[in-house]
Image (tube, rainbow, N blue to C red; front, side, top):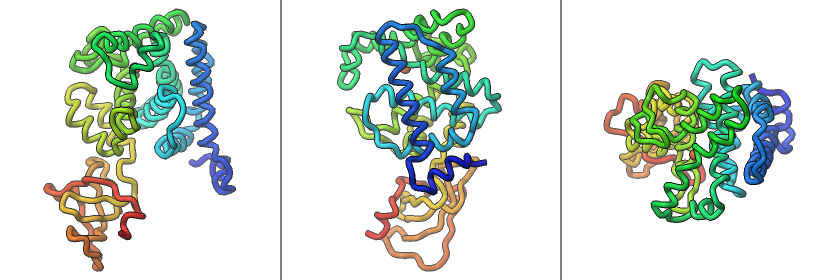
Length: 311
Ligand SMILES: [Fe+2]
């Protein structure tokens, strides 16, 4: 079901509802950060209300997801990051059987998970952009505990939230921090947030490296972070994020370029393509369909923009 107001706005070519919602999230997150820096208490009901506004209409999560993917990123990097982790974690949670209340709790957790960063001395935040000394790394690693302490002040009712925040940097194999918790000791929300946090960081520009495309980030998370994340949550990256949307163009390891004509639910990195150019760059006239799920030696190496096809 699409949001009729959303559709109308887009048809009119006016500023879309998704863009306005996204900007609203940036504004409220900026306010939340300012309040944290001023040592003001966090109002969890206000944060839950923001999360509810989004999760009460599932189509808003999809619209925000598209907005987050194509948005040009300017402004405070950490604020943008938190808003994107909020959106991506809700997108991942679409693959779980969560009630609206649970989705709201997850969303609220995403918005507050990095508030501890703003309780660190300013110098460390600035230093985060460049090389960090071991001492600075240790200081940064205090942020989940600082966030926990901040949220503990919200009362007994939100003890779970303070706990989730403290666990967002724990890893399945016990290699995380601050408590080196393992698998079943980690709250499921914290597991989802950990995956969303890592994915968002990898798919956005950082001072020390350019952004990776979605499918490259997924490949890297699956291969380089083995054992760090819950496999059940990792699967959501594949099933919930549209890695190669229909009609997108991809290049294979043998140089072939094709258009995605069918996505593969069980192996999303291996869609079915219609071949457009062969490995030598020659236009392929006859209809040639290739199921990459059935071609063990072929895989996608990059996404090709339509404008680059004509070259
Ligand atoms: Fe964090």
